[in-house]
Length: 125
Ligand SMILES: [Cu+2]
Image (cartoon, rainbow, N blue to C red; front, side, top):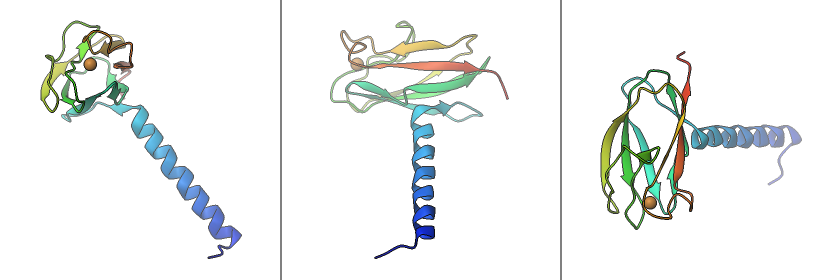
C-alpha cells in the first residue's frame, strides 16, 4: 500500500501524539479527588516511578505486589505498607506532605536494584 505524503504526515503525527500521551502517563500519575492511586511493586521497580500530590492532600494508595518475591513500599524507608508476598495488596493512606519525598522497598538490596519512587508535592490547582 502506498500512502500519499499527506496521509503519511497525518499517520506520523498520530503516532507521535500517542507516544507522547503514553510517555506522560508512564512518568507521572497525579493524585486527585477521591481516586485511589495504584502503585505496582515489580521485580525490581515501581510503577509509576513518580506520583504528584497537591500540597496538603491526603491520598489513598493501593500497593500491589506484581513481583515474584516479597516487597514493601515505605515512605523514606519508614511508614507505609507491610511486606507483601507476591500477589498481595494493601491500601494505605499517605499525606499530607509539605515537600516531595522518596519511597522505596526496604527488603535488603531492592532499593539499589531500582525499587524506589518519588511523591512530588505540587501546588494546588
Ligand atoms: Cu522489594
